[in-house]
Length: 99
Image (cartoon, rainbow, N blue to C red):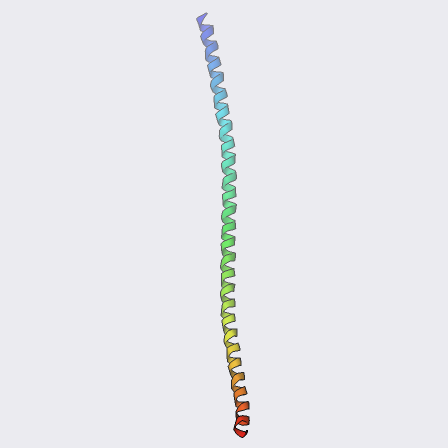
């Protein structure tokens, strides 16, 4: 009688061990899916970061070009204003001498 009881206990222990192993395998599969999803999301974020860095570099380059253009235009306006002032001074100078 002790053999059938031992066999029954062994089969029960084996069944319990298989259930535990099956549960662990299921949790591992779920964890792997989560890890794969995170890895995919991380790769997408890295791609977005690279794209945004490139766009930022382009925007900064455009900003520097605009600043250079603005500086050049400001110098031209100052130069033109100086010429206008000189021309006005020359045009009013003879009138003052004749008066």
